[in-house]
Image 1 (cartoon, rainbow, N blue to C red):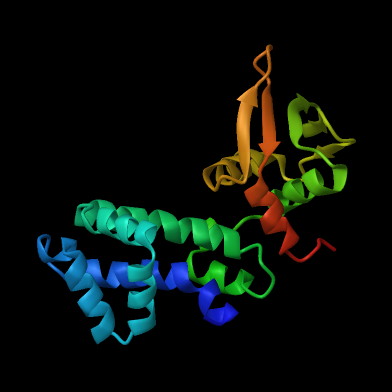
Image 2 (image 1 turned 180 degrees about the vertical axis):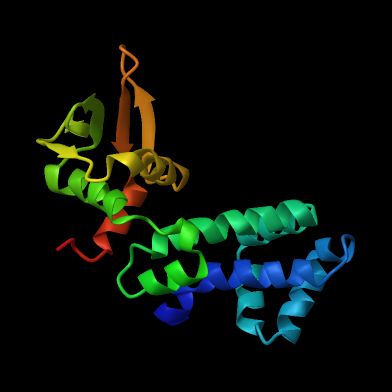
Amino acid sequence: MDPLSAAGTLATLVGLMGQYKSSRDAASGKDFDAFLTWLIQSGQDDLKLAIEANHSTSVSIKALLNVQRADFIERLARIETALAGYTSAVEGFEALAASTNPDSALSEQALDLLRFYESSGSGKLLETHSLQGTTFHSLDGHGGWLADEGQFIEDDLNQLLALGLIKLTHNGRGERIFHYTRRAAALIAGTTPAV
């Protein structure tokens, strides 16, 4: 399989499962063999063969096909929101993400916070509040980062948490500590540097 095809396999599979489930009634939408037949009819012979060759993939698809239709659609909506958030930070895909799901795009401030983790060598940031605004102090790297748009920092933090780009814990005094994730590092590695 060529790299471009491999890169889109998950997105293709999720999209095709969504099409299949939406075009079937509750009972027939759960039939794995019918799904494989539908893939062939849809010109996805290679994908069908790849599914059959991977037991783990087959089991996962069977489980997802058995999910109630409304729950499945809700899960697809969550995937779309997450995908829009991620792609809004990838060079060349920003406009596409913003036009298809404008509420999910990561703000420049959110991206700047993630870039600070990288530039400071930090894995953990302590949030503090002062008259100057909300500041994040590195606990294991160096420096601090002051939110430019303090009125929106909570919104940005909530979005980063929802996307799994940062994790939240508290210290002994109840202060919030935000942890950088591998997912965020991979995202930032693929973004355009701030100017």
